[in-house]
Amino acid sequence: MSGAGGIGAVAIGRNEGERLAACLRSLVGRVDRVVYVDSGSTDNSRDLARSLGVEVVELDLSRPFTAARARNEGLDRLRDVLPGVEYVQFVDGDCEVRAEWIETARSALEADEKLAVVCGRRRERFPEASIYNTLTDMEWDTPIGPAQSCGGDALFRNAALEAVGGYDPSVIAGEEPEMCFRLRAGGWTIRRLDAEMTLHDANMETFGQWWKRAVRAGHAAAEGAWMHGRSRERFNVKRTLRPIFWAGVLPLLAIAAAYWTFGLSIVALLGIYAIQYFRMYARQRNRGKTRRIARLSSGFTLLSQFALLVGVLTFLKNRLLGRRTRIIEYKGAQPGASDA
Picture 1 (cartoon, rainbow, N blue to C red):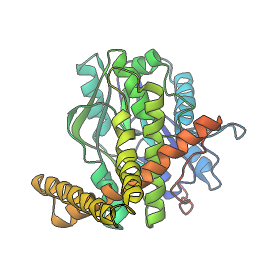
Picture 2 (cartoon, helix red, strand yellow):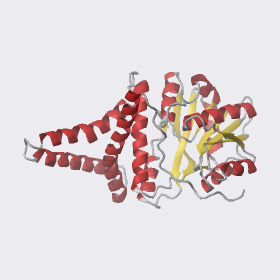
Picture 3 (tube, rainbow, N blue to C red):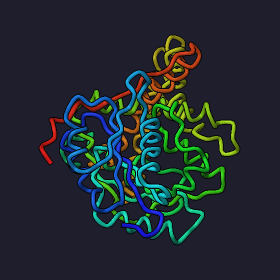
Picture 4 (cartoon, rainbow, N blue to C red):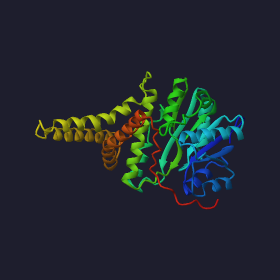
């Protein structure tokens, strides 16, 4: 628990079942108030939350769901039930907060008044359950220290959230990096701590789930670049151009030249991909990764460029047509949570 001002938590979810039970139980008793925002669950998520003494917000079904919108509405309710709240822990409903995290994160924020948000180490609960869970666990392993952005789990200073107006509810993915861009532009800083933060349950068992998740990441990169790419730091521009080059420009050039080169351009393309794969493999091995991890990381990073390109093109198409992209979901519903 915190001192004066208070510390609260906002969890968001939809049909998370037992994952949500673990999430909420990891927060109750460690913060002053917990708010759960439900995005149209058809399981017993809302009843479970109420049975634990958690404040529940049910999103209006007539408006499009986004994680950003859910977090904003949860934050509004938290400010109502905990006036003067000083720190806010956001967490996804498929994550369990580690026992020491809240106090560790709060201490870091109290020590630096310009620090807007701190995050720590998110780990997969079942990293060996599938290669896709393994890849996700690798994704969470980011450098410690000053950071450009955080993820869905993080402890924020409420004053910083107020200063930038919270999340942009129109952003369907990548809402944290977008808001962190605005925080940094306002003079705030972000830090990743060398501390265990959350256990995440990706629950990815199929290639299709992994593909959809990568498509969503491509859409997020393109949307961020569209919003802030003209800034001095060229926000998300490289992340958007990379799949365009590797999965779009290079293959098109090779195919276009295939007739004139008697197919040698296709061979050259495959050679370029092979060189890039071995470069990434060597980089992972130099970082101390095992051969298996290095192979997985290199192979799927290269393959992901094609899924990322789909996401980029989806954003551009819908933007040019004036249409809104629907949320790209990769998870199925979790079996219903047990009684509290």
